[in-house]
Length: 421
Image (cartoon, rainbow, N blue to C red; front, side, top):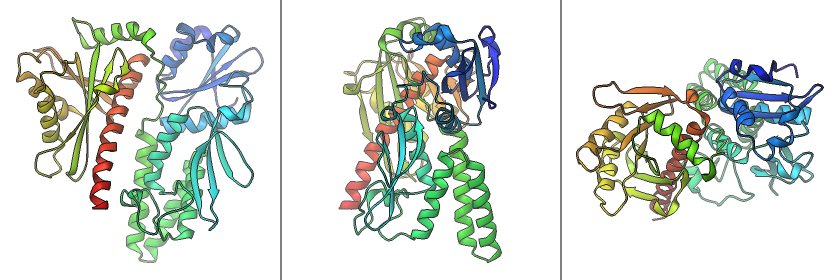
């Protein structure tokens, strides 16, 4: 347990409020290891709002250990490696590999490897894991696939597929040496060896530059930059533990945070998906009492001229949404974006006296901040996402993830229709 710094369970306020891995220890050994966006908040939740599983071991905890990471992906990978190493008895379904998640790298008849997530193991397949949370693992692979494109099925069509056009698939005629090298680097990252991958990429880039292969060197540089951005800023840990039973507490925290006089039932979240303005789409997802209300989800095909102007596109879909008098008004609108997106949403809803009381907030994922509409006479402020109470963080991230998923699904559908035509 050399990675952890341990505190007495009476010293929880000294735990850091950053992403990382935590460990509960009894008098002798580690009994539970978990990951968190905010270590202090997550550990306190175990003590203050224990689940049925927490109740099996919380009274045995003597010490709480923590290890800070630079990102959520690093926390996910570290958690997997530490559980594999120490096998704490109270992690998930104990000693039962079928309830963990593994990244499988398997070869088809042509010896071309492809990747998938599985619970089961079989011979002749490379496995990386175990990972506790399937949703976080899927998100991590989705982000890493942009840097290291890979196949997800045994057979690829003879022509380019939709994933090829999105830059996520090696295509029908790959360079097998380069592809297998990419998979090796992807495997190392999932095993917690990001530094080794970056060093190898840098050496490869310098060699290409020395040999005047400047285009190849530029591609590796871009891959390195993308990998760094993903590792540092990708939100993959959801920890969605706010069922309807816990909504009343979350609602009270939310009302205080946003200075709301009335109650909160309906929250809407908006996102834009486009490639340089082409086939732009917008999404509106709705949560009722803290839970996705998928019958209320709406998608928008942007009508304005095809140009990369997310602000104008956002104004269009909010204007069109508010024009629908038959749709109930939300108490809160969450916008995907920073201060510019927040301001255009505020101006748009303030154009109508019936919607002026809707509170607008926006999530700037790049800066990891939540911008909040302030009452008149006060400056617009922001709160670092990791400083939010765990319940609010979970709710905001869940809303934003749903809006992004819904928007990009519609965008891909339009792209696929265009490609097929």
